[in-house]
Length: 344
Image 1: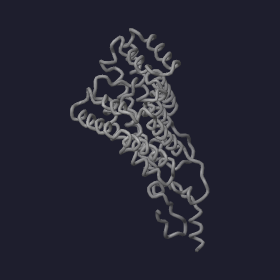
Image 2: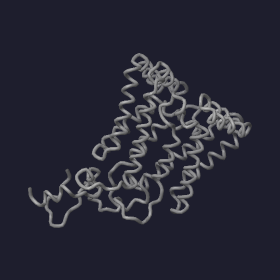
Image 3: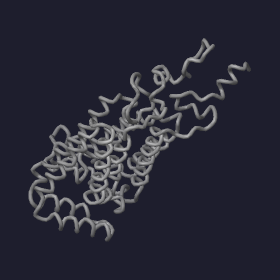
């Protein structure tokens, strides 16, 4: 074996997600840590999907509830899918759990991360339609407090933003910009958080008792301490649905615009985004119902927090985003004196 071949076998190239497999282990960078967090959420979903409740007809009935209120073009396939799952409950649910398990494990592996992220986008879009009814965004009852625009679409968004390739050009100011560029990443953040602000002031949520009723309903069936949190929050908001909804929408709008501000101000708005997401997850979503035995995912709260971390302004540290464009595009830099630097 030539010396060049031996050297290549032991080198780890910047921008190559498989580099660590051929040489010494390298500590994961910020994007890799976020990918691992996303993979962990898929594994949590797999564990939730494996609960006894999901193997009963109650699961298909739960899926069918996302059809009412949606246009017929969306509602009919949802009802058909729920009926099909009801006929093959054990097999279909085992398949769903296995898919989510494979997605989580695939994202955790450097060699399989691209395939798993790509598959997670396709899976998330299918589940967003047939399992969540597009998160209820086309229904009058859509609210960020109860999970609009749907948790699973945020999995797809994170997969796009955390794609393990760097866009050629200027260095990325935050992790979410590395794959798609800062303008596109900021536009996606604005679209998401502005939509949350819009859903917060929809007619169904502006009534004096609307918001308290939503919170109380989500607290039903939870452990006593979590039920108490929800009922106490509902009592505080009783009769104040409109001002509470307007205040929430205003805070969400500030978070939406924050990524366009200078770094110091952007950090403050991202902290606000994390606080809002945590409050929604605890009070509005009751931790996504994961303590009830009848939840398929932790809802939007943790995903919104993970997104906020992905937009945190980066410091002036050498990162893969600052490598030459050829490295980000192909995974192999040109080596001095080498004529055959080609991708695997």
